[in-house]
Image 1: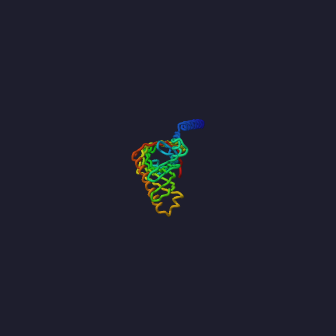
Image 2 (image 1 turned 180 degrees about the vertical axis):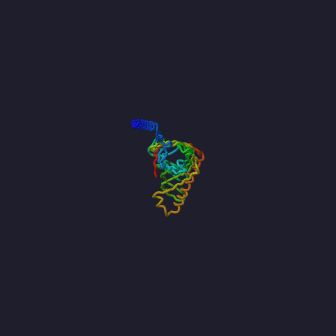
Image 3 (image 1 turned 90 degrees about the horizontal axis):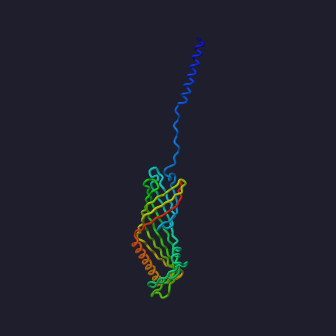
Length: 268
């Protein structure tokens, strides 16, 4: 009897051990976690960027752009400022094949003759909308070009018989608005390439001519000379502004395109 009990116990232990082994083999394994996927939008984590570039009828620009990062506006809107310039002196020297730019003009008792210095700069504000929260964007911008020209000359008048030596400085401001579209291709390290194009529309320009120099300072007490200079200054300002108006009315709308390179980073 005891022998049968021992045999039965041994068989039971063997069966239990076998069942445990099978159970261990078929026990469900925890589901494998999917590997982390790279983000589908490389702009994630970047909210500020700076870029430089140039294009057709666009000056060399340095732009700083802020990309919205809030929960509702995340990667939807961007705002920026930019400043640019163009080496007009160099360009004119190449076109005229000379290193010494000079001008000569005579009108109504005014003679301007001497070397000329020029400066062309631009300023712009812009807002962008990323309708798909991806690379494509549309842009509305406000911009202003400022052309500054300096030269020297003399002014004569029947009321004041002597020649008045002057330094003439003319400034022309040309505001405009622009509607553009483009793509900003941004890599995960922050580098990006931006291609854009669109149309700009000239608005009414403004101009101002100022006359200065040592001779004018010395004539502060001569009413006839001051009256002559005031008339001359107004005449030149009106003439420059009228010329700028004719140009902007003739070329009211013009196409533009840009190519820019830059770097984006997480500012905060």
